[in-house]
Every structure is written in structure tokens, then in C-alpha cells.
Image 1 (cartoon, helix red, strand yellow):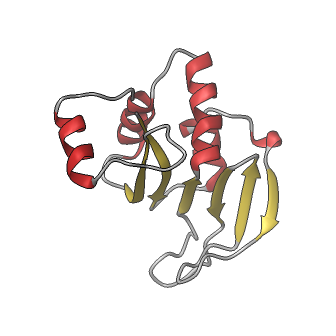
Image 2 (image 1 turned 45 degrees about the vertical axis):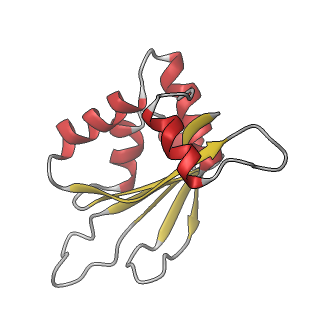
Length: 143
């Protein structure tokens, strides 16, 4: 059985898209393609995408946000796999990435979604939620 992060989204209240790409992800901006895009109930106007790594940004300027700052990092399962390979090449972990966010932005970033995937490696899953709970308590997994 293996457990991994399957989806995560992080909001950076005062950052610009390019800043998150360069400073948080430590990736060059030129590998990202910029598209016009919207996120439901948000003011983001663009999407920077490289593979499955997505950063929404360019918020509309409003009275509450006169600088139009703020962006939204979205990593699906494939996006996480891509980030994992990049972190691993540099000797970093996901924990290092999260601590880096905290150092750079303090309380001005937040996780808005975190999905965990459990793969029991069977075509037809046969573990009940109670059995999975016991396996986790006994640390019978690869993380």
C-alpha cells in the first residue's frame, strides 16, 4: 500500500505569479506558457502552465486589492509527480517546499485543498476504511 499527495492548491495573498514560479518553485518563467483563464469565484485572469503545474494570477485590481496581487498554485497528481522529480533532483522534499513557502510568505499563504491518495495495489480494492485506518496506525505503508 502506498500513500501520496494527489492534489494540492495554495493561495498566495500578496505574491505575483512570476514570483511564485521563480522563488517558490525555483523554476524559470520561460518554461511556462501564459493563457487567459479564470477560476470560479476568484479574480485571477491568467494561467501560467508548464506540464501539469499551474499557477493562476494577474488578479483584477480592486479597492481591496489595488495592486492586483495574489496567485493560486494548483498541482494535480501529475503536477505533484513533476514537482517531486524537480525537488528530488535538488535534494529537496515536499516539507522543504512548504517550509520555503512559510519563510517567504509567513501568514500570507494558505492551503485551500489537500487530497491524499491511497493505493492498495489491487485491481479491485478490498480494504475497508477500518482496515486502512489500522494499517496507517501500524505504519504499514510506503509514503
